[in-house]
Length: 204
Image (cartoon, rainbow, N blue to C red; front, side):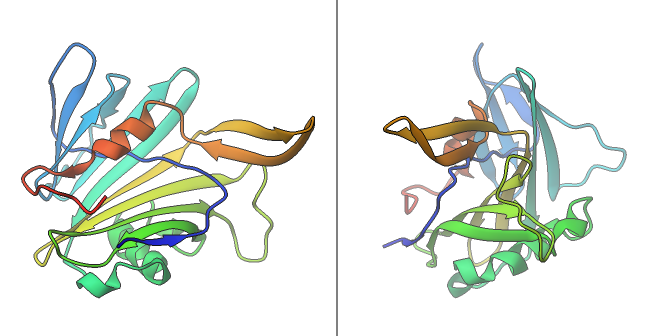
């Protein structure tokens, strides 16, 4: 069974590598490590000077919101590593050599779920934020991170999402008791469809 962790902010995520249009409404995105994802036309693969087969950047412009996604493949972690306590190590390894590598010390993860077994593959979905040590960042200016990792014995593939978020107040008896921040639709749908293209029966 997946392992679940407490979370009070709901986020969502997204993925891809060379994309082709699959219908008038969506793109079929094929990523490193034999992954695939349905993507909204508002999201486009970023052109980079030195592209490689292990990284793809995707930019989404949804209304006035800009969300950036990175999908990357790295050397495999072992199945038992797919737990919340290893989130920062995963983030550091997956962002190494990219412009997001500088964020490894400020990324923290406070919620999500994991499935630490290669049956058929390990999976971890995490929610986090960027916050410098010693600062209070749970406010309207906080930067959120959505992180999804898939793993087999041969490869680990991850999707990281950062950017502008929506905000909604949870009101009880006329009083705001919580604030939810989340990435704008259709990013959540795209995240849900991110998977290995040829491995069936994902854990969840």
